[in-house]
Length: 264
Image (cartoon, rainbow, N blue to C red; front, top):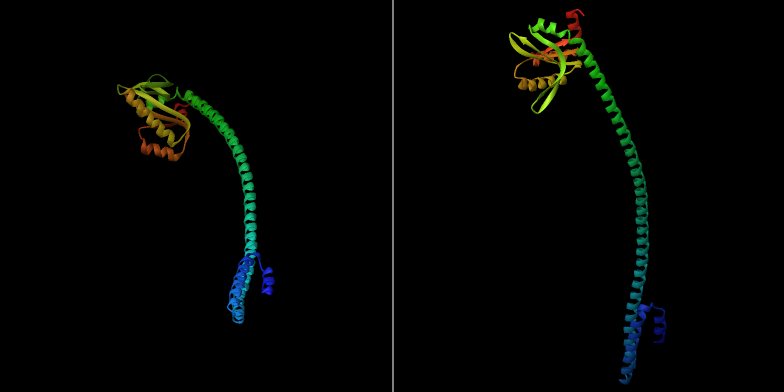
């Protein structure tokens, strides 16, 4: 029995308590058997039982050792996995920093672009004003040079007698007004007629359609015959064809034609 107690001392602490209790039970069995004078049989039986118990204890100890080894392996694997995860987190954090830095750069570039775009917009507006002013200047000069010449040409082409001078003016009506580049009154076959004209350096389809809409507005207001004319320095052949096909009532004059006919 003593050798078993010594062996138990070498076992893990978790197994000592149960084995000590088993040995105490064996001692009680021994005492009872001695009283019955059956010591040899009991000793043999006890030895067999104890060997079986001891074998189970050894198996438990081996299982405990295996469990500890597996636990160590699990801890190592867990630590390795954690280290990989942590490394990934650090890489993500670094990538996030780079992204934030890039976003700041883009925001700064966007701000600079907006400032440059605003400056460009101001420049374009100034150019539009200058071009508009230049266009007006050209238009005024065009009109001024043709005002004295058009009455003769209109009389030759339509038989209209112009009353007074042609001029640039505003015509007001209910709900608005229109600026007319070339305006005058006259008589055609004994009936009053209004000369409504538009003058531009170069005329496009958009100019033609805008002029047509203005003539319609003024026609509702004036309620008298209107003679629409367009005057320009130059016009694309396609636009000239467009006027003839879609608005044959509009007379198109080129400045050189007018001046040549009046011999200026």
